[in-house]
Image (tube, rainbow, N blue to C red; front, side, top):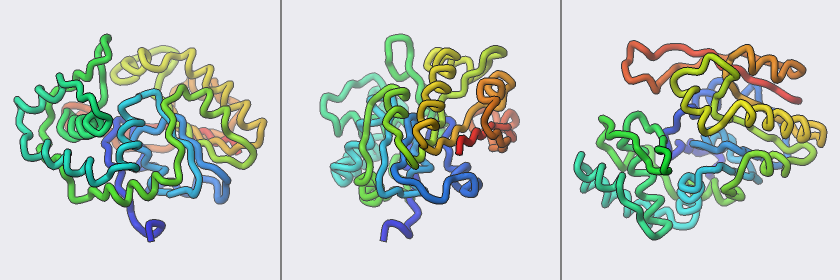
Amino acid sequence: MIDDQDIVPPLKWAGGKRWFAIKHRDLLPATYNKYIEPFVGSAALFFTLKPQSAVLADVNPELINLYSIIRSSPTILKNKLAHHHRLHSKEYFYKMRDSSPRSEVGRAARFLYLNRTCWNGLYRVNMKGKFNVPIGTKTSVLLNTDDFEGVAEVLSTATLLCSDFESVIDLAGFNDFVFVDPPYTVAHNLNGFVKYNEVLFSWADQERLREAVIRAKNRGAKILITNAAHASVRELYAEFEQIPVSRAGVIAGKSTARGKFDELVIRCY
């Protein structure tokens, strides 16, 4: 039974919430109808909960294409990934980074290959939309945790959308559970990845997100938000319950720069 099976997310993702899914199940609603995640990323909470009905969305078309291909063609994707595994080298990495596969399954295999072999699994593009993260230290393209058939089975309950978050949250109705994990952007004192996120997700987007959350709450949806533990974010959600949590940082280039970081959970139910 897939319900009893531990599904490891196939992607490593900056800001991924596997730690949250493991440590903070007590913060989640006990019951709900549909599960909705407008910033799906690695979908760690989705793969932990395995909901019977879900909407998974993101503005990144390569990400949504990957999940679509895993769901429809898990064996073909695994075989293509094995091909990348056999050929992996520094030269091959940069060749694949510069490539533009025509088929959807080719794009998905390239996306997952680069995710597993680039620096810390970071997804970043330049101003022209080209993936530009350098090669990392990991050389394994196929992992012993891979279970593409199991991932496909869990994804079979989900609707996949390449969409802006606002229209996705607007789908939430009474007793639906919306898990909101946006790029962490604050109103000032920007630095590091928060500064990079400002290009992707501005403070105006944070404000637009809040309005979408309020509309969904007024329709009776249950919303749980993870966000930066920053005064501007606390003020933005001043009327809602706020719960501080800690996570381990894993993106810093030097291990000495990694440590515990505070995040903010906002619960709207």
